[in-house]
Image: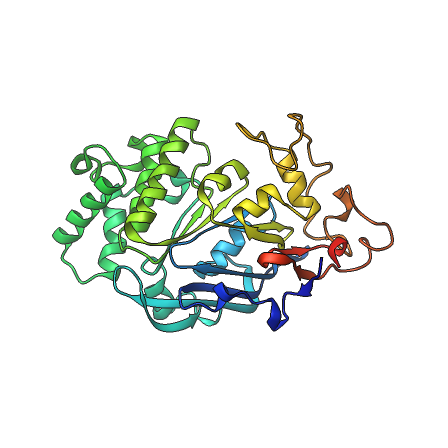
Length: 358
């Protein structure tokens, strides 16, 4: 199978050149500068999000998924910072987001500047992993939703309260007129997550970043939240970056999948290709380690689950060559442990970082 480097102009698909591009991440590097050394949390990450599309970001804990999301939002906590790359956000106007006004590089903006603050929470919103730690315990749910509305919209406090109530109703919150005056600790886990989603959607963003939004929820509540997000996406026409380690959730939610390992993208393709024709040994290992209910992929000829050997390496001492080679069942001694694998494009826009496909 012929391959070409991803940077080659021939590798660009028509979709990437379409006018419906919303977000372009190019060569993103986000590092944390600590006394023990430099943690390269995100390293040379590239991907594109189109309007109305759901892009799933998957990988084990510690692979840089959340840091990448915070980089897009321009909220990387110190001592971390974006050291290289572009985060090109196509600002839009109108509810459907059909007209582009300008392209802004979020990586170049002052995180606390007016421009970044006007985009964050309005054009781009985020649902964080654990609502109990993300929501303020000393403010009511309504006050926290109203804060974002008053910051980005020219409305009165009474109008903002009504928008908050309407948004809570939109996310399926029972009795929103009462819930708006409740504190986070007075709500169940599922209701707190709905409140977080309502806060993120209160200004009708073009892009929603959902970072493990179903963590610590029971299976029934998880299914309700996922169904809710899908219906809201269809209703509002927004794009979603869905971050999770659960490939079962990705199968339900995503159109396109980006697989990360130790801060790098190792494979990306449409969701069907990832599940039925995975190329990178890490992606294959992830698929082997989860149950597949009701169907079997090319990687699941038996029902036996296989754990990925070893653990994610210490970020202070990333292995030379391919970072996955110490755990890889296909590793070639003298090659994978010495040569940095190129990012190659296969047929149909399928991209993989592995020497096996050179």
